[in-house]
Length: 366
Image 1 (cartoon, rainbow, N blue to C red):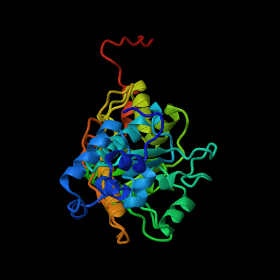
Image 2: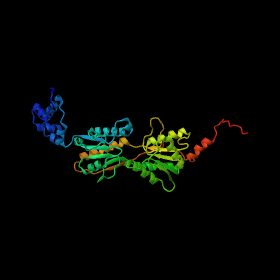
Image 3: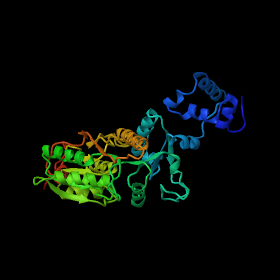
Image 4: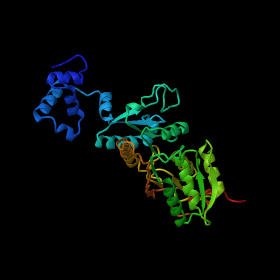
């Protein structure tokens, strides 16, 4: 029985010859309430619903049950452009998988109408359409985070976040411990002069890497070079590293590890034969490199799954909303670019220039 307008519960009740309250119980009622409705009546209502293709109004269901079974996902950076795909897609896969398993739909929020900078709280925010929100991004807006913490709306952050007027519920990676483990690997391989290339903040993910690195240095290791703002030219970056005498470079960003590899190869230096390079994240291979960098594995999909599960617990917990904070283990990856410490890479480069290749003919001295 096709229809050209949206059916209501009143229409279903009229077609089934029952009250609207009975239709509401069939759609939304708990088992104990449904038990009071005769099986024949339930079957008649369900048959009408199937025949008409009736879909309950989500707002009406929210009024009846207090839930739309919709979770929002908000990102402070675009999630789908290829430049960000390696970062965001594993999170989105994990969120989708867990939401589906728990019977929830997803709503992607873009902060529409806010210009170039995305905002959770737009003037016409659709946040409340969903029962709760997962928030992810490399950096968060502090004011918006504080507003979320102060409010009653369920949310979970992916990635560790500092308190914002109160504790923030999050699921993150234990970057500090993972970075410290890589420092220990370098120590065991004889490295004593280390370089750290990249920022130490303000994002918590950067701060945690630096915390793990600096705490693991001890008295036997020396920070030979620390650059926050790196030179634009690859050869200048390599020159700074070689001049410091560091035998291993810890790169916060994969792109800088690739730059070092490219510049080293151009000068006849090998990784890790002459210089070791570590990338502090699980971008194991990259286009144009094909190298498996020493690193650690960030469990992005598992972080997303657990954040979604945590959000569902907050949504379904009613007024009881205990804040949870969880850091997941990041497994170290030895890779192909971390080896035993050699002589200073600068000296190795000088030797490569000074040592003649086999078959070289020198002019005779008169």
